[in-house]
Every structure is written in structure tokens, then in C-alpha cells.
Image 1 (cartoon, rainbow, N blue to C red):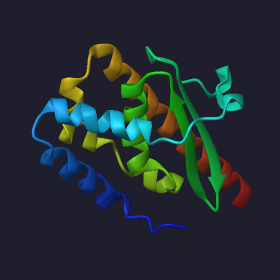
Image 2 (image 1 turned 180 degrees about the horizontal axis):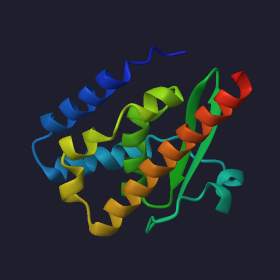
Image 3 (image 1 turned 90 degrees about the horizontal axis):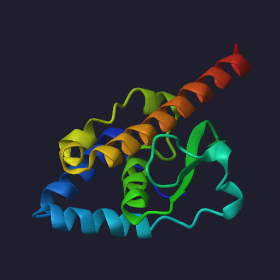
Image 4 (image 1 turned 45 degrees about the vertical axis):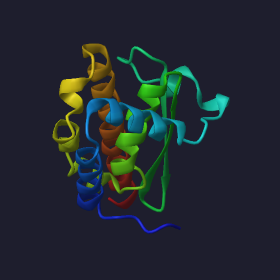
Length: 148
């Protein structure tokens, strides 16, 4: 297993990476490259149950709990959207539900995404964040009932 940076460091590293890119043309290119780097989502997961509502593009997020951590597989039919998912997963993937819930997505504002996305993409990004947080909340609830 690869070494996972603490969640605060993962956010800081993401912000530094974006700040190092000189303009939004380069940042969009980087987002697209991140999206292209996502492993393909198997078609059996591209279902209504995994679809994220509120996204203009088709987006699927598939959670899996392993050793108390949430692992997400995700995909989209749009390259920018896939890149936005990859940005979120760079911070939230393979984290405990508590880590996710205690880490608001402040990096979205810090890297300037909020100001540079179209309203429909911004809504989609918020829907993806909500899905990750809802999944963490549900996993926390299941965990509490298992150990309670």
C-alpha cells in the first residue's frame, strides 16, 4: 500500500500544485490530465444507484469500505468532470469517515475552482462533494451501529 499523506497535507499539496501553475489554461490542462489518469470505471458500476444527481455530465461515484477507510471509484463521460472528481479523490480517497467529515472542502475555494467553473459545473462539483460527505456520514452511522 502506498503511503498516504495526512489529509491536511494532501490539501496543502494540492493548493501548492495549483498555485505553481501560471494561469487557468494550465490549471484546466492539469485537471484534464488528472481525469485522464483515473482508472476506467467498470460499466457494471455505471448505474442509476451510483449516479451523482445535479451534475450536467454523467458522473458515478462508487464507495467501498476497506479496513475502516472509504475507497472511491469514480468516472464521468466528460474530461473536465473526471478531472474534478480526481481533484476531490486526491484529498478524500482512502480516508476514514471521520477524516472526511472533519475536512471541509476549503481547497476548492483556495485553488480558485469556485470562481473559474461555470455555474452548472460548480453545482456538479458541490453534488460530488455532497455524495462523498453523505457516504462518509452513512459509513460512520453503520460503524456506530456495529460497535454500539
